[in-house]
Length: 247
Image (cartoon, rainbow, N blue to C red):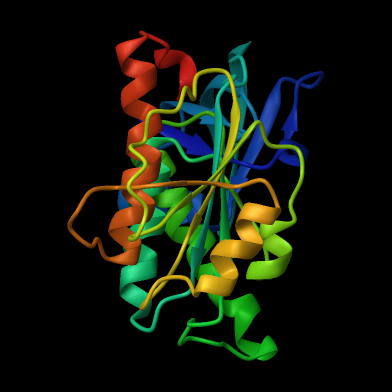
């Protein structure tokens, strides 16, 4: 059974009902042609899982009766990727989709010294809305009970200064350090450069902020590929340790 999303504010556990609207309503009613009486699975994207039966369908939303609920534990391994905005928007969007499928916890659009795309303040909100829609679709496809967070764009300096991480890693094409890091049970932050990579000054700044360099191999990866690889690296470790509750 497919998993769908609604906000926490739209779920009333006391009244045993919930409301679905927006893109999820459109997908369920206009695309999948769901009818009253049909059962669906719904999450608030924060670990709550509800089995519900569609009760009443309106023009822009529907209500459903909650039949059963459970709470999914939050993953104890969290991966944040700060990726430079890219000149080709479809490449950044590919990263959003695949990283969400692989289990990323937070994505930070980043502006580095060599970032070629600098959207105006007026365009940022529209981009964020589009990106969240892409991530929601990917989360639905992969049946994630915890939606990844998407932040406002940050400069490299602000991203490098972020606190609260157990591991801070910066893949760098001139590094020879293999990615032999233990990720299980940790909060991890990756900084991924865009076209042209990071400058030498940025690498030094990252080192001073407590980041460790590592290599993703001798070949040079595109920025979006490196971002996807970073999340896949952690996922692989967790699968090897059978910690598949990360999803």
